[in-house]
Image (tube, rainbow, N blue to C red):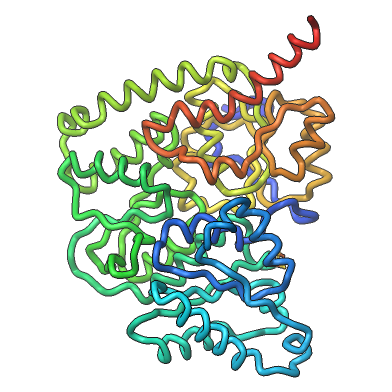
Length: 427
Ligand code: SF4
């Protein structure tokens, strides 16, 4: 029987992806440093870039810049750009100065930027050379956070990917959790898995260099974030086995994520239910309370962090929303495939951006909520649309059961505020 075209069938995995190229409104990968430097407590991130890069970090880090953060920018001057100074010698000098001033640094990342890439500064070679100079006290690695190569959260992916080749080799059967989450959230995940008898559990990135996990053919790993496609590929190349699952957002996502790992470690149903029953019930209740204003409302995601597909799955399946378009900067089906499988076909799935065309689609659809970057939020609010700043979803603890209510709350707050302001205006 032929299915009429107007009736969608299958899931979002089968939906043809609308690929767009054009003007983009996104952060570059340098922004990942803001949360990575807090997670990795003996690492330093040295951006080799211009004043633009330094200003970006300053404005993205907000008040954090006053807390002697473990990141900085080695600014390329005109003499460097014109090839009049030996940039490598200068870099060596800067690194020497930094490491003698901050002896607590055990891991130094040289982070490439657009300017360092355009002048083809070979930071990989510099990292190798500096590792030899400063071994065994400090390990120097390199990755690119440039806007030419990376979008926002891809900076974390590039950073973790750079660590994979130097992870020690192990034959032990271990679970590796991949992705930098706030400690309190990571502790919850580890606690739930440990209560099921799963272990040893390692995390990448580790809080301290000395705790760096090993990897080998008996390593199984699960990603905590959907933007870690390159890291997952690099771990797989080192023989580790990837556990695919929906991402741990909301009650359902968390349960399915835990279930996939539990299955890998042969955990029986009774144990699983005993450990998860209470937090599941708490999460369901918190979501029900927080999603009251979301039920029946429509949502439009502009591309930003690659969290969009799992979040749309959470909002449509657990908060009663309808997704109109789910924009992502990149789609790694190997990672977000299980989330796509859970959503019935219907929403437009787009990859990349042509911002003017996408804004036309937003205006035509008039969604109840538009999830977008800071640069678009206020202009859209001024047009009468309700928006949610996407960046908050990266910085706020939103994974796992105990944060499920807060996650729904982040989306319902702007909707509720709009309703309250309308009421006040009418009075
Ligand atoms: S890396 Fe590129 S996009 Fe990012 S701040 Fe520097 S110049 Fe701008």
